[in-house]
Amino acid sequence: MYIYLYSCSKNRIIWLLLALTAFILEVVGFYLQYVMLINPCVLCIYQRLTLYCIMIAGILVAISPSIFLLRFIGISVLIYSAWKGLRVSIIQYKTNISPFFICDLVINFPSWLHYLDKFFPYLFYNTSNSNCAVNKLNLISLSMTKWMMFIFSGYIIIGIVILLAQFCTLNKKIIFNKRN
Picture (cartoon, rainbow, N blue to C red):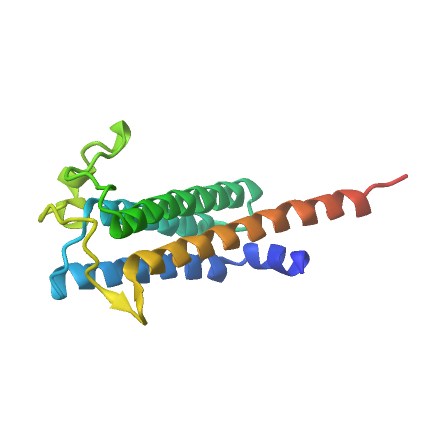
């Protein structure tokens, strides 16, 4: 099974499919924001940023999936971004269920991304100072926060399985190609 996953990780279409799933989630976010006029809160914008990182990881590896270092960087970015997205969605879930958790009203990007909301205001600017505690939309009786928790958990599982496949097949190659 790991050999199959290893061969899939060297396939460009798989990485483009990963980028496509993140892109589709971004399109859904834009649809909710600009068509249905459901403004995102600060935590939703942070989740949007992590989805962009996942999309960039998929595109980066799709350039040349046969290079191990590029695959490793892409898998690392995938796992880290999904983990950060899961953390943010858990925080947002806590704000939905408890009145004692509140989210920021101002976006606080890291220092190296400080002006991201100013350069791309249509992507990352919080126009409404929307409250994170308000549950605005449910799909199949689950809030969007819970859906994002499942989605980011799925990305983490996919990333870890692909990462393990890289090292399991690497060990088998070293063992079976060893000459006595």
